[in-house]
Length: 159
Image 1: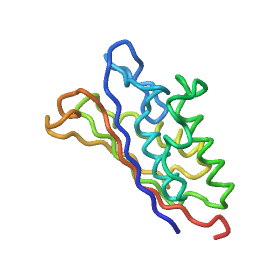
Image 2 (image 1 turned 180 degrees about the vertical axis):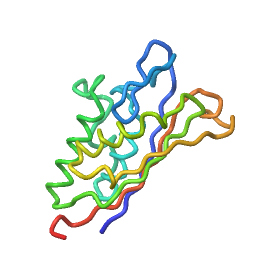
Image 3 (image 1 turned 135 degrees about the vertical axis):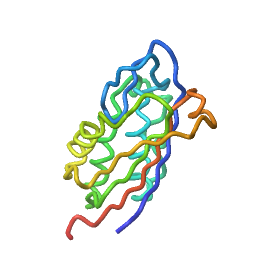
Image 4 (image 1 turned 90 degrees about the horizontal axis):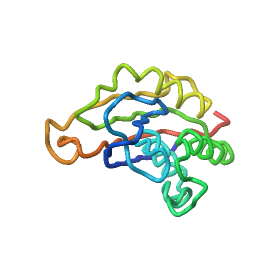
């Protein structure tokens, strides 16, 4: 069993879609980034890559690569799953938190879990997603950006 932690943050900007957990969420702003800037999926990817001892998402999916421009983060998560299964690991569980004042994410949690579980070939029960605010403090509290953190446990696939 191995444990990994991930963190990601992106700035909120006008004229961009807000995609979190692979879900297109109606909102007046979206997240700026090279890919679709899905902070939740990026944090999960970072935790899995960390648990495997393979660095971070920037090592594997650099923002200098044109092939990753506007790519769905779920596609990148699929590539992380290929690394995971190639090393004979499977998902134990994932616990993630989205940090933002707005919008409310709870109506989308089930779809987010389904999206992640489908790509990672695990049961949705192995994935927990929650959200919190920072009570108006910091860049997320001021509405300048959204952050996400994730922790994962991976296990040898022969278990």
